[in-house]
Length: 106
Image (tube, rainbow, N blue to C red; front, side, top):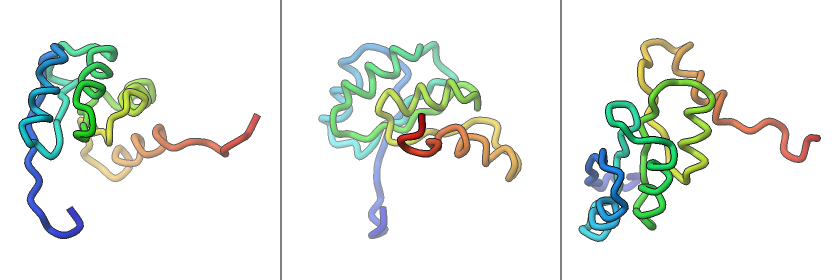
């Protein structure tokens, strides 16, 4: 991306692990996992990300709750796409939820 190269991706809405595996091996640069407009569960999303191997996955989360954000990132997603972002204040919510507090704190 930094070099201006065009990257090609596609949408994944099916939970079958063969789908992201085939798509990743077909030469796509990234996969868009739609957790908002599909019936995918958290475990489905984790399986998709795992099946994609080294192909980065961006997950559109169902809502901007901390649980949704952390679940998507914990699945191994390269990033999230947050729905309903219509202001700077709303835009900061996913960043706050995804950031870690002081490392090593007890």
